[in-house]
Length: 291
Image (cartoon, rainbow, N blue to C red):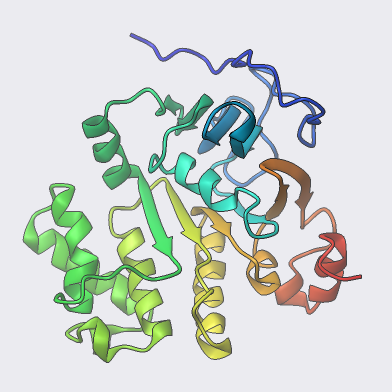
């Protein structure tokens, strides 16, 4: 049986709510520009009329409000906006960690918001890598064992899991820390372990929630270098961030306000790539971070 095509949910938008940048979603419309995509390519991620509310009636809080958004395969997307605007909720909906109140979530051409919990958990293990601000490493496991664990849970043999972990720890520059417990690692090292863990199952997408929020400047630089490498390798990456330096590594930046998309900027077209070419001030002005 073939999967249903995405369709508008038909739910009226919150009174006075504008359509997101680019207008309402049109089924069959080509995805936004990105690497490794063609006219018929499915986006890595798609939101159609996506909403998440908490509470009911007049007390309802619209954390995400009628969002239509495509993330092409290979694109690095930064999601920005003030605290409480719905950024992290959107990321959780994309990763199947939360269920929408209305609308649709598509991952690699498959609708996931209707999946049962077991099927959704299997899909997350195989297709989504998560990076969190607080790292969420297992304290009793070494760096290598933390990276191996998702591979083992996804069905890889111990030998395969060890080989993948060793290769990824080498890639993030932590081969000499492979046997260390998290307590013996710096914040930047723990976040690099978390990034390696997110990549161990070769996911379709990596979702990163404030990945540099707990890091100093030097550690932030190391993580941004890794994200640059992931972008160059064509990894689909969605990052929630308050940090201009992080957003400047992306191909595209969307900003949120009151649960809705307020702006959508493709940095290459706008002369961006701010961190790499020194134009972070241009990006800050573009996104309203500077007066």
